[in-house]
Image (cartoon, rainbow, N blue to C red; front, side, top):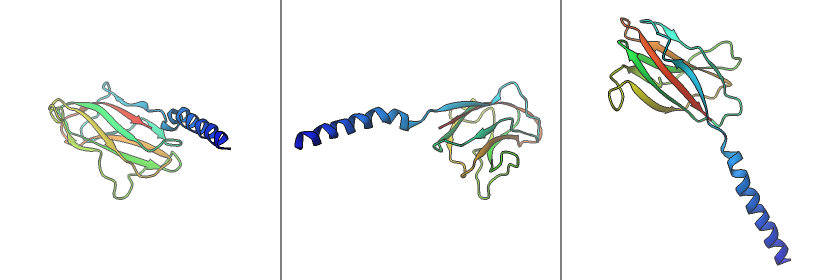
Length: 143
């Protein structure tokens, strides 16, 4: 009986270790802005709808802002994929970010964020300075 227990225990541990990579999920990258689209002063840009079904809820943005304006990046959520709105109490992902912002003053950023529970998600990039345009390069990492 003890030997049978040992065999089943060993099989359980083996099955657990082989299943761990499957439990971790895949991290995927989605291009939000490709660095070729200028966002005019006072305007917004949100070209991609992200389906969050099956995701674990981990999100990060990496990118760079170029141009003379200031950027705000926020998220909007939707239950149906058609009507998007900023959740009540949501905070901007980045705000007032310029080509000279960031750790190295080069307009580059990497930030993790946790959106409200939703089925669909949009990342909205807005030029907030009101005078000059921005050219954002932004990639969303999701898992």
